[in-house]
Image (cartoon, rainbow, N blue to C red; front, side, top):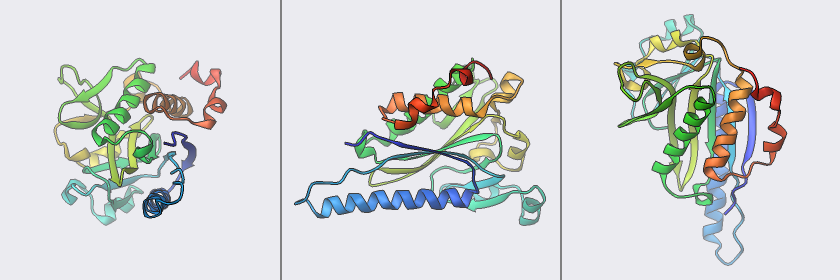
Length: 248
């Protein structure tokens, strides 16, 4: 099993470019797994793993189980607010991506870690929960709902802070999570977020009353993911910059 993970911070990237890049990595891993299976007489080649982080311009994406009517805008109105729309091949309903949001795309061969999709989703959520705890936010899960929430304990005012949706094939993953850090939450008013009409959306900045350093959040997320999954990330030591962790 190859637990080494290639970390790439892609900066702000058009959604379609990020999707195409994921698809290429995803397809290459599956092709290598097929090669290994079809040639048992030769030593198997290790399959790579990737952890991609980026931010997107304003975009709405609709998962395979989503309802198109959960997008409350037409093409002309989308253009007016500077947003695009893509029906895509992940699970889940509709969500928003945009500036100030940290998006993570793990493209992993789970044969290198564990073959359990439920565990995979729960560990992604746990990494977000631990990251938010680093900022003093008490986040958690709501039974029956994917993602990470504030107000999850009493559910008097539950607020979603991180959406998740993944695709898997032959234990290879793509898509991932979107954590609202300094996100303009007004863009969620144009959709029924994740198909859930009766619950609010929030961000780290909204909860703390101030914007936070995106690089700090990304570095903390990487460390929690590495610890939970047992990932070996060669770049991890280069991310050690104590000054980043002292202020938000």
